[in-house]
Image 1 (cartoon, rainbow, N blue to C red):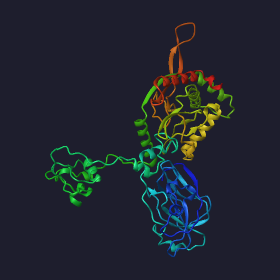
Image 2: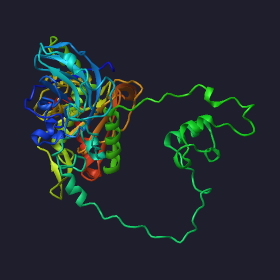
Image 3: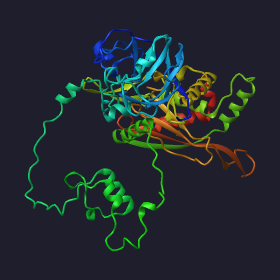
Image 4: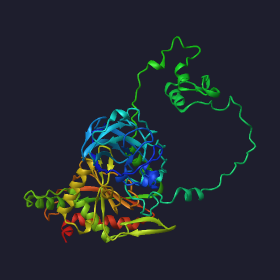
Length: 499
């Protein structure tokens, strides 16, 4: 199990009678994806001679979650459980969560073992009984006795990608669809039969041989000419075993077998969160026409002000350069509100939503991927308040303890790689449905002409290169340039942040 922070999720029991063929979702008439986490446990009485028991099912931990992975079971069959005890770890596409049980009882049977992947929401994962119940009678208890299981629903790419930063009701093109499946199917175009081009039909020898995906991958890896392999599968289909058994006709005796060669790579399965990040970034680049505006900003005055404030703080706070950057971005967003906007489709009408408050998403690297916790209402916060919130949100993001409302939304994003002295500048991908993101590089000392009246000497100036990425659908080039100018003005005259 990955060594990372975990959310703690509270669950309580939901009691009712039902037969072995009924699940909690069926009995209550609810879609399992819409079940709140508190209804993840169902009281049931199987049709067989099992004592009264509680079926624990996979909960829906987000609006778009359809399945989850079973982590480490913290309790074994026969263990007594008290309210607040961790029962099992559940991996979602956002984090690793502790499943805390909120009733007294005994774990009678584990239905889904550690390592089970893609367990559909609502599917049974365990059975609980009251203390004193004979759990030996549950040794023959099966998934069918718990109501059976269903395959996880396939999520549309837009739904999966949107979960990491915005809820379903935002109205943007990147938000999950709220239409019922029936409505979406009705709008699908009717299938049409393709027209013939009158070309010559290919013979079977000219066509690519039928082979399983794993066989094709192995043939490519080992350099096996797949056209020369005779398939042993149904209809002559080439299998992985056929590729492993293949030997060239002439050089089989002299050429060492590729099977004995050590692999030169390692395949690392992509986590659910990594898939979400990949889908979201690809969607952002495809749907948002990015353009970039860079500027070199002097931070010499800012660093002196920071040092003076930290010295006089008596340990009450410790401001970072990023705290000033967040405040400066908020000031620039208020002066150029077109950047503090987003492109949305509401009831079939395209609108540009201009926000009256500035909620800054701050990019934080975590063990499971990039998170963007939000500092809300930055325009009305002081530097010490911003600093305290950033530290708290950053720690909880790395521990995997952020609530959805703390990372979904935001009106503008800052990504700061200034802690890496090798990074002079970089460009960042916009975080939909936002229209802009600021990339901040590291501080460099640069020689500039001296401002002293005497001589033609030079002095050292601390400078940072910042690069703004803007969505051209919302922010015109001149407007993006104006925002960068206002940001530069505030950073180079940091006392304006105190006004």
